[in-house]
Every structure is written in C-alpha cells, then in structure tokens.
Amino acid sequence: MTNIINQRVQWIDFLKGFLLTCICLSHFGNLPYFLKYIIYPTGSIYVPTFFMLSGILYNDVKYPLYKDFLLSKIYSLFIPYIFFFFLFILFDWNMYIHTYKAFFQYSKALYFADGPPKASPIWFIIKLFLINQLYYFIVHFFIKPICIFIVIFLCSLIGYFLYYLNIHLPLGFEVIFSATLFFGLGNLGKNILFKILSYFNKIPITFIFITFALFIFVSYVSNQYNQFSVLSLNKIQNYFLFYFSSIIGCLALFILSYIIGEQFINKYVFKKISFFFIFLSRNALPILGTHVYIIIIIDQILNKVNIFDSITAFLVKIICLIIITYFFIIPFLYDKFYFIFRKENLNYNPK
Image 1 (cartoon, helix red, strand yellow):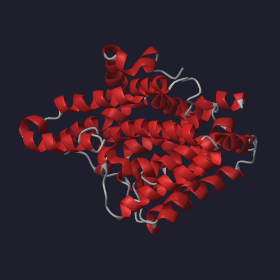
Image 2 (tube, helix red, strand yellow; image 1 turned 90 degrees about the vertical axis):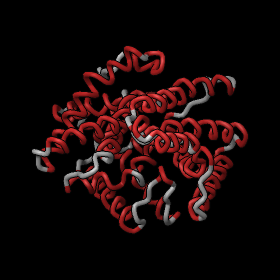
Image 3 (spheres, helix red, strand yellow; image 1 turned 135 degrees about the vertical axis):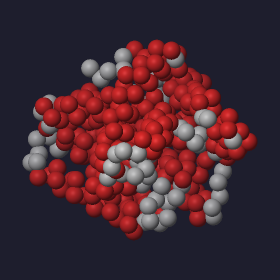
C-alpha cells in the first residue's frame, strides 16, 4: 500500500492534471473538431472521476474531532470558494453595467452553491466541501462498509428523483446527493482499486490500447445514448446508464493513468507531459477559479481583432491562457493571498 501511495505523483496527479485540462478546454466554446470527442464526456465522466479521486484521497483518521475535520475543509475548500466568489463580484464588469441583473445572478449562485458567471467551475469546490461534510457523518454514523454503501446508493436515488421531478434544493443538494455515490465508491473501493492496479505492472502495451478503446466506447455510449448527461446540473437522464458508463469510464481512466505512470512516465515525451499535468494538479484551485475569466477576456480581444481562423484562434487562446496563468495569476495569488491557499504557497512547481 505504501508503494502505491508513493506513486500518487506518477498517476493520481497525472490524471487530475489531465481532467483539469479537459475541464478548462470545455469552457473554450468553439473547439477544433478533433478535440470535441475528447471533451464531450466532461460532465458525465471527467467530473465524476474528480469526485471519485477525492473519495480515494479522503482521510478523516487524523482528525479526532469533527470540528478539526470541519476546520480543515473550511481552510482548504470553503475559504477559497468564498475568496473567488467575491473576487469576481469586484472584477465582473456586469456588476457595474447591469447591476441588478448581475446581483440577482450572484445571489442565485450563492443560494444554490454554484460558481458565479465569470468563475462557474468553482461550483466543484463548494460542492466538494459539502460532500465531505455529508460523507463524514455517513461513515461515522453507519460505520460498516456495506451500510455506508447502501446509504450512498440511496443518496444517488434521491438525486435522480430530484432530477426527474425537476426539483432544485438550496446549496444544490440534488447534485451533492448524486455525486456522493462517486465520492463514496472512491473511498470504499480504494484498497481494491490499488490491489487491482498493482497487477498491471509491466503488462503488454496492447492492454493500453484496449483500455483506451474501452474509454472511447464508454464515452460514446454515455454521450450518444444518454443525451449528454451533466453531473454539475444533476442532468442524469437514464439512471443506470449514467452511473454505469461513468463508473466504467472512471475505472478506464484509472487504469490508463496508472499504466502511463508505471511504464512511460520517465520517457522523454511523457516526462514533459507529466510535468505539465502534475503542475496543473498541484495548482488546481487558482486554475479552476480563474481560467474562465481569462478565457472570456481573451475571447473579447480576439473578436475585436478578428484576424485569425478558428484553429489559430484556438492555439492563441491556449498559449495566452498558459502564459497568463503560469507567469502572473498563480505567482500573484500565492504571493499576495498565501493565507488563502495555505499549502500551495510554499512551492507551485511540481519539482
């Protein structure tokens, strides 16, 4: 088990960085055709995988009291959410142009624990905070794994019926109920997952292509037959197909990432790619909180200039986003607001 945990940088951070990349690209709007098939399963596979990874990393043993656990999550999740939420109230020009409309949008986002218009992805941060609280009480009240599984399964059913009845609860609890199953499965099944992954050391490269083919197939089934399910909106469509395709997709990503981490991470090309993904993973909060705002501004400039074709504009947007985020946003936030980001401010490079 220790060996597997030590490999977190090699495959878990690699996977988190890949998922964050896909989530960022999903907010680019008009994407090149070849990327659309990769980005389509964001709401139905990539986001659930993020919740499952969070469940794998969940650990309340080091917190003897609930207040200690709560304070930890307030510092790591709730405070960054509040920081970005009110930051973009100040920097959203619509607050000064269309004040009443913007005020209503921000009030609604706060009521449903969503992200504001110019920082929509931070819904994940606050939902993860609330899921941690719910799951803490579930595991401490029911204790036995089978009882915990039954409860999180019932939570997913509640989330589905709320979707079916088109009911939206305060703090977006319909999403929390639906996502808790992924979080709980990650936590309950992590030992089994690590044991399974340990058998994939030094396996033939053919299996990588089989795994990738499985992922592509599941993506197709999830998106085509389930009409583009989106977990963040609790848009589930077909209950069985949503959870089956999402969980199989998560497992395929785990296996693929683990194989890459074991067999290719030290190869020159993969080493450079892994460095990029690990960097994203270890700086997820600033990237998640600011990339939409940056993309909106770049779009405004490109629309004014209007001299690039769609592919060139896409590449320019990516380059600008990387430069602004790496050289300005992350250093500035960690320097001026180190008390918000706590651990990350020590070193934002993955070296």
